Each structure stands twice: as C-alpha cells, then as structure tokens.
Image 1 (spheres, rainbow, N blue to C red):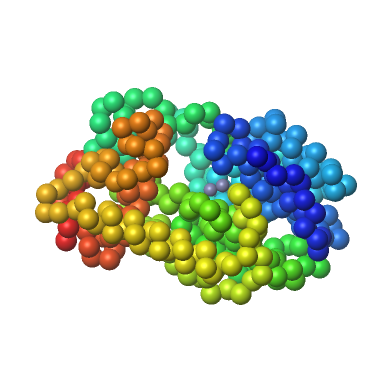
Image 2 (tube, rainbow, N blue to C red):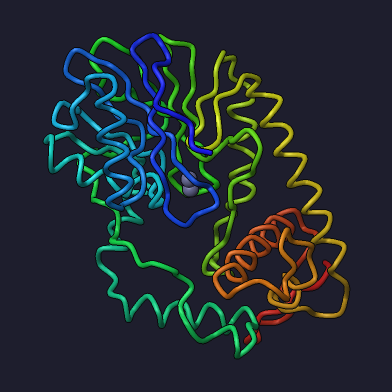
Length: 329
Ligand SMILES: [Zn+2]
Ligand SMILES: [Zn+2]
C-alpha cells in the first residue's frame, strides 16, 4: 500500500515515489521550502511511473519540478539518485551528495559494462562461488548510472537552503558516503536508508575481500552517532515517519551484534569460503531458494560481518589462497 503525498507542516512535504518490481515499494522524497524554491531530499527511481508520481505529487502542493532549487541525495543508490538528473534537466537545480558517494558515481561513469562484469566474476571466484552462481547477471533491470553531482558535501556542511538550516551528517555504512540531513530549524532528521523504522538496510562488502574498509563497523559507529542526537521526528526514505531515533538506532546495533555472533559461531579451525559461510547462515528466504542476485547480496552482507570480526580479532583469513577461506582466530 503506497501512502499519499503529504503536507508535513513547516514548509515540508513528502511524496512517495514508486520503485517498480521492488519489495521496498516506494521511496519517500521530501521537499523542503525555501525562498529560492524547494530543495528535494532524494529523487526516486529512474522510471516513467516514478517520474509521473514525483511530478504529480509535488504538483499536489503547487510545486512544479521547474521550481526546484536543488536535490540533496542521501546516497548514490538508484532508488534515491535515479531521477535527480531529470529534475536537474527540467529545473537547472544543483545536485549535491557526499564526496565519497560522488567518487563512486564517477567510477560508474568511467567503467564500461564489460569491465564491471569481469570485475564481478573475479570477486565471485575469490569468494568461492559455485560455478552455477557465476553465470548470468546480478541485475534484473539495468539502470543508467546516477547523475554526477554539481556539489559535494562533507560531514557538518550546511546545505544551500536559504533561510533554513539543513545540515549534512555523514553516516557511512550502507554506502561510504551516506548522509542523514538534520533540519535544525524544524527539529527533524531525514535518515535516508540509515535508520528505517521496521527494516535494516543492506550492509555489504563488495568486492567481498576489499582491503582496508569495514562498512559494518562504520555503520555501527554511524548508528551511535545519530543515537546521540536529540531530535523530535525521523523522516526515513522508506516505510514511514517515526519518533524515537535513539531507541531504533540501538535496536539495529543489537541486531547486527546478534548477527556477528551467528557468523562467529560458524567459524572454527576448519577453513570456510565466504560462499559456504553465507550458505550456513539463516536468511529470510532459504539459501537454496535464493536467486543469483540475492545470493550475491547475502554474500556481501556476510563478508561485511566477517570483516568486522577480523577487525575485532575474532576471525582471520587462512592463507592467501584463491578462494579465500576464513577461520577462528
Ligand atoms: Zn540504499
Ligand atoms: Zn533506499
């Protein structure tokens, strides 16, 4: 059930924008009023139906896409960044995102389709993927890479929103450059995918053995960061608005601590590939029934948890063999 566009008061509107064939169903795009025109927070999936919903939804409140002053993208994922370029084309708006995600967007633009495929195969082989999991593509419908932003944000920056105070809070984890946006003059926080009321965002390590990064530890740190904030209302990019940011952030931390314990319990002195380990974890849909794309997401999620266990000195790699295997430290 998709909610309707809503006037949230205080010069703030919410427009649900559908994500076709996706269980998330919709992205909540927010518009924040300013004297130079509204600024959008996220823009929704790149699809004609999504565009219509965004345009008509804003129209409910007398906002034309052509009036939009800027688009702040919480992170580069296509359900958030997808329509930003089209909004910019119609309005001349700027697009802003954190510099770490801007870097990924540039990589997308520079790497061709063939290069991405070869890269993916290497990652899967090193993870010990079964031959049957190597063929085919992980993507259902290919989407164009996100628009390259005009502006890059860093932690603590104020967004260009004349007469108001909207501050970028860097919350890496779900993506390296994920940001929440604190509307300081409205006592509200836009949390993107970082904190959602009923689901936890995907935290993955991809390629599965990328050195020197630990997205889950980053994510847990980012949850502590927002947990310390006192803010009245939470406006996430999916599901629904809620109060009680700290409580929800701590709940998500507990979920991952339990998951870390589950991963650790599978490890022993007998070396396991990432693929075997992932297959041994409990998932909402059983591993045996998962399609290829879901298996790769699951493996990335398991890899993120193993990396955190490596950081904490619980797990380690066994040798440097291809595929990589993990044991208890
Ligand atoms: Zn996302
Ligand atoms: Zn999302």
